[in-house]
Each structure stands twice: as C-alpha cells, then as structure tokens.
Image 1: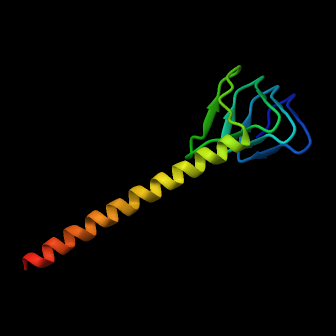
Image 2 (image 1 turned 45 degrees about the vertical axis):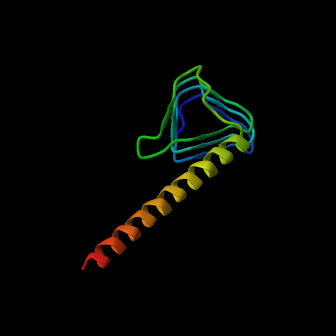
Image 3 (image 1 turned 120 degrees about the vertical axis):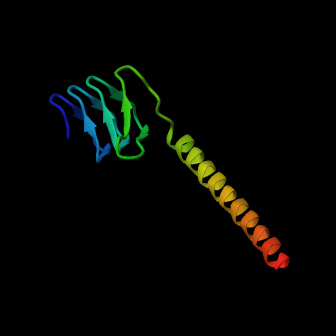
Length: 104
C-alpha cells in the first residue's frame, strides 16, 4: 500500500510494504516487509528489510538503513553464526548419545 503524494524514483523496489503519505524513495532503494511512516525519505541505494509479520517500522526522520554491502555482510555473519551454533548443538547431542549408549 502506497500513501498519497509518495514519490518513488526509477529503479526503487517496494515489496510487501506500506508507505505513509508523502514518502520519498530514491533510486535503487529497496523497501521490503516494512512500514514507513509519513514524510520519510529512503535514500539512494538504501535497503530497508523488516522481519516477521510485523515488519520494520521507520519513524519519520530516522535513518536506520545500511548500505547494501553492510546489509549483506551483516546478513552473512548472522547466517554463519546460526550455522555454527547449530553444528555445536548437533555435536553436543551426538556426544550425549554416545555417552548414553556406552552406559547400556
């Protein structure tokens, strides 16, 4: 849903998001799964990605966006950390099973 008087420049992407009245989205910006309050500017090449069903909420004047390179670096580090944590849990469970099976 896009509010009245919004300006969305060529190459900008709005995906599954709500823009309040009078928002300005510059070239190559990407807004996904987000709610943007009225009269908020999303800068050139910025990525705003919400999570979960509630999405990200950007209050007018706030600029919590990351440059695309920072966004993907942060996303990659998060995935690596979760992968390492899952591998650690599997190793612990495996060693616990070995201990249990050796006791019987």
